[in-house]
Image (tube, rainbow, N blue to C red; front, top):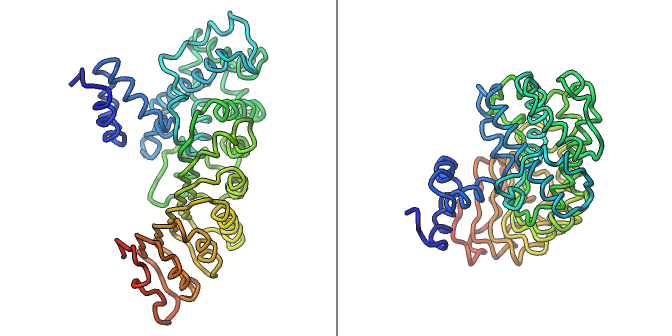
Length: 382
C-alpha cells in the first residue's frame, strides 16, 4: 500500500479528502503519502486551523494548535516572498530566525472562508502573545522577526500581551499584509465563503472564542482588512477563478464584499445564500440587491441554493431567468413566499435537472403555480 502508483494514490486521496482523521493518519506512512495528505488538508487552511472552533470546550491548548498551524502558513507566505525578492527587503540575519517550512503550504490553498481567515489571525495573535509563548526567548525572536519582515520595520516593543491589546493599528497592519500576500501567492482559488459560527443557533462557542464576537473586540477591528481582499494586488487574478461561493453572514461589510466580488468573479457555477439569524428588513434588502448583482454578473451559473429567507418579490426569479440556459439545480430550504406569483416564473427555467422546495412556508392560498411537466430534463423533484 505504501508504494502504490501516483495515479492510484491520487484517486485514493481524492476519495478521502473530507476524512480529516484518515488524512492526518496518512501523514505518518511515508513522504509520498504525507505530501498527498498535506495537499488535501491544506486546501482550506483556516478551516483546518480552526477545526475545533465549534467545540464548547475549545481552550488554551486548542488555541495553541490553531496558532501554530496559522503561523506555519504565515511563515510559508514570508518564505515565498523572500524567494521572489518582491516587496520584502530584509537582512539574512532577520530571515535566519524564521524557520523554513517543509512544504509550500500556500500552493495547496483552494478554499477560503473569510470569517475563518479573520478568526485565525486573531487566535494566532492571542497565541503568540500568551504567557506560555512569551516565556520562550527563541519564540519571541521568531515572533518579532515575522512582524519585522511583514511590516518591513524593526519590531521590538511587542513583548507582552498588554501592548497588543491596546494597539489596534498594529494587528490591522499585520492582517492586511497577510491578506495581500495571500492574494498574490494563491495559485488558484476555487471556493470562497462568508460563514460565521457566531450566527448559527446550533453552535455554542467556547468562552474564549465568544469574546471575539463582541463589538469592541480585535476581531471586529480587522473586519475591513480581511473582508477587503478584493481590493488587494493580485485579487483580480486570484478571485476571478472562483467557481463556488457560499454566503451566510450578511453584515454590512460582507454585503460590500459581494458587490465588489461581482466585478471580478464572472465564472461562478454555484451560489449558496442563506441567513442563519434574523436580520433587519433594511439589511435583508441590501443583501438581496447585492446577490442579484452577483447573479447577473455570471456567465454560466449552474446551481443556486437559498436558505432561511423571505421571497417577497419577483426580482430574484427574474434575475435567475437570465441564467436559464445553464441553470440545472435550484434549491429553496426553510424559505417564506408571501405570494406564489413571485416564484411562478421558475417554470421558465426549462433546463432544470433538480428542483427542491424543503421546509418552506407559503403565505398564500393560491394554486401551486409550477408544473413539473415543463421541465423535460428534470431528474429530481421534492
